Image 1 (cartoon, rainbow, N blue to C red):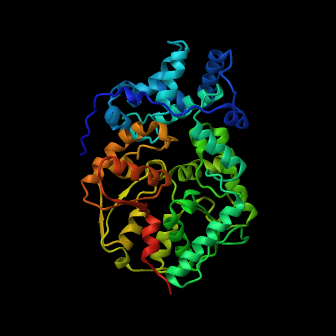
Image 2: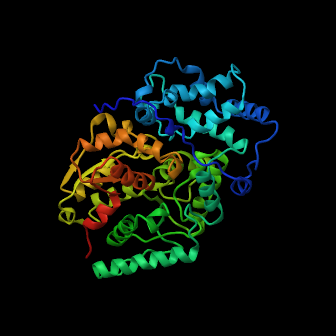
Length: 451
């Protein structure tokens, strides 16, 4: 078992995410300034949410303050701040929902600090004897804050770009096409094969919706997708209208989660795709598999009538003998796998990434059993926390996962989430560890033998 005792809280850990300004709030339909009657609005929004979501009421009522969740949260373990215990964070909401406290300026400051030091990873729920999901409390609290015009610059900026352009990075159609062509040329130079990354092709079997970071930052992941489809002879396409799997609406409110998700469903319909395949992004998978059909379904035009994860597709193609693999392409790598919380705990994809890894590397090692699969630690930057201004909090939140990684002796940390891929390189550097970080599809792409 990984023991990461709480450290003494440093005053620097009171750092907060940068607040969104009116130019980001107004386009999202949020108040540009804190309303004069904000306490009444906050109370009304809480009442609305408590009336709408029975689960939220139950989670607030069931807690007996047993403390089983306390040492399960990576932010409490890393910061040592007692207000980062899930039970304490939920109490911020609970005491106001029960009208045992009044909304004050100090309340807003505390809510903004601690509900944006929760990554909604749900590890606490995996250990709670009553199954209380503090992530749902955090989501409700953020929705109350948003109704008052209080949200982070990072989350609102990403959502605005997704609505206007179709992806989180703000990549316009011309740049998307150019980047796809550039990677095609790279693959041609490497393999001598004409491996395509199709764009807006109607009637393809699969519409792949990757995180946009895969086209600009995690390019080996994008190349892995392309090689898989090419080797298996599966027709596929990307969409410039829905060029982003990630859904930051999950970190603000359900209204924007639905709106961001609708672009993907609309693109699949417009391009007449028969399958909808999600790329390596944790919150993309959670939003897709848990909410897509409810928010924007039915998905009866797909076969199967649900989104499919790229690792599910890869496992099926490998089992069916559609791709030939050579583990020697990854010689020298000692690989371990980080379960993204939204893929594993919230999304049920536990064995598929591991099956792919065992097929493409000779030396695969697991982290300790109480830190993987449903019990995985968050990377420390999920839930909309991948912001430079809270780097100190992010590094503290990463500590439990880094401690688990150290036990494996691995030199390659594989994962299936773009946020994790962005978080781990600075975390490994911060804790003075030398290792590569990459996707499962990166390693699969290297191992595929092209005919």
